[in-house]
Length: 247
Image (cartoon, rainbow, N blue to C red):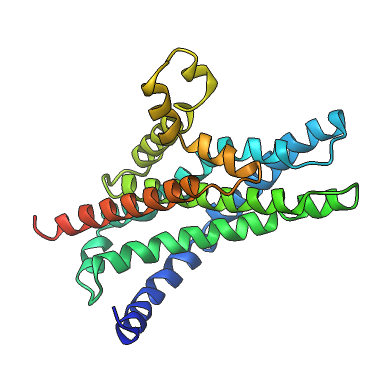
């Protein structure tokens, strides 16, 4: 793809991206999302912080995947399901824009909102920095891991939303899928599994890779896992949307 075609693609993506991103703030969902995220993560973190007196964000990052399990499906459940229910998907797919560009526009709008939410949480490390010495490298790694985990969850949520016209169904299916993907690498599951199967479960677990990154270890296997998963589910999303044109 040359630069001119990339510019044209971005020009087609931009209006849908803007529409989707702004739509979050035209309804209570954006403010509820941000409020719940900040209140829950900060309350759970500082509750333990005042008991342990440890100037570290390890506990904050350990809570994050569980919060994402609920908030990522809530963020993506309406993306395609609402388009189908209202009938606007038919108009959207007749526009002079490729399916992949529509999918990317929706993905980046949700990802942008997630990035904004994570940015607002920077009040936590700033507060801790006044209370003691923080390991900046570990904090940075934790936020990179959180961004990748959230991006993966969003890509899965968008794919599942494209399969149904019911937002509640999309939410519940996304929640179940993300929970299964997260829990398969936990000790509570791996204690009952041994041998090669345990290694397979650990590799496919989103939680195992996130835990590795939040330790400050940038392993290429973890990065590749998240990026390949994002590409896979975005590709599946494009295929689902494309198949609708041929029905």
